[in-house]
Length: 165
Image 1: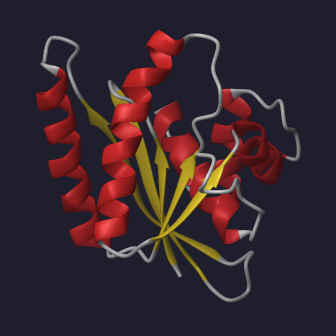
Image 2 (image 1 turned 180 degrees about the vertical axis):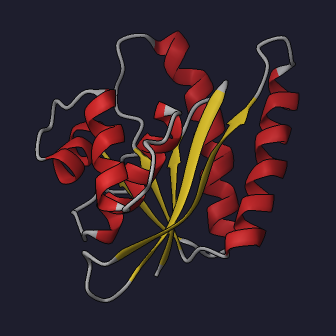
């Protein structure tokens, strides 16, 4: 199973791709990165850029599953809306490309990867390095979070209902 993990956002969208065998703990790192948009761009242009870059990633890596962080209820609606726009683009493209979609609560991802549902960004980066046998820690916490999403899906962790996210 090839899993594309995504840390949704509008300014910085982390992504990471891994392969997982039927033995869930055997993971192979394939790639990661961050899609960036500028706050000076119009919203539609930012979403189009995300769309175009995400298609390139899907075409290059040919994932069978999307693993992403669920957008749960947030106190600050003004910060949640841009993330929701970006996440909508990602979910729509995943459906178009017939990817199985798994969404996880942030604390679920932290628990699955580090054993601590309240882990720090640094903890996640370190564990991603260890679990994927990387030589260096992913420098972008967005990319590390995306890889953590993919690892969580590979482990078969129960996901949030897609009806709610």
